[in-house]
Length: 291
Ligand code: RIB
Image (cartoon, rainbow, N blue to C red):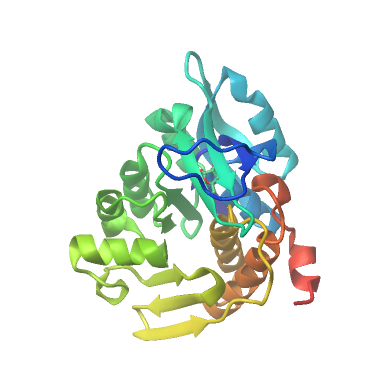
């Protein structure tokens, strides 16, 4: 089985700041680092590190070869990443404060110009039962989800960055939906629908240090999973790591509770590290870590 991920590719610029700046404030950063990121990329790397065959579908500009090369080094199939002329690779400016909290500004660049032909070529290689993963940092999400439904793929959507309309556009086609608690509340406010009202098999709501809740709408069950006790230094990419690990575990045939337990361990390790795709823990470390 395999995971096809229509996902963003960003250069992440991390600025370490004493606190997140407020409107009108000028603040000196204590350090800056560039790494590989993008919600899509982070999820692809997490899925590959969790031992799933992972195919990334996306686009970079001519300045993005380093990003594609690095994804390949991390075990991700990059054949369906298109290089677009005259378009910059996406990038993110990420302020991280001492508590580990962050604030992100994105330039989507090539992530918003992924050609339909690139998506079609990738999905024509997929088989029924493979997974299609989507997030809200690319164009053509609903089109890809519709193709996936026709091909009988298992489709997952991570609703970040949050946009209620983008969620509604993919809802008819998806099997599993990932929200964080803020996104779930925003969605309920915008549509009057709670996770149990949605026409998807399963909804997972992540709650940071409070763990996560699985709404299994097929079994009509709600189950809470606690988080692990760690001291965070940087929460960026932890949700992406969780999503990639859950889907990789499901792809390998693990039942959902075990998939969530494994992903919770991966996310707990991730918040103790600075950075995004480059520092996502591999399966061996996740399985062996002591908390
Ligand atoms: O979720 C973290 C990611 O959000 C970063 O890697 C950044 O690129 C933004 O897309």
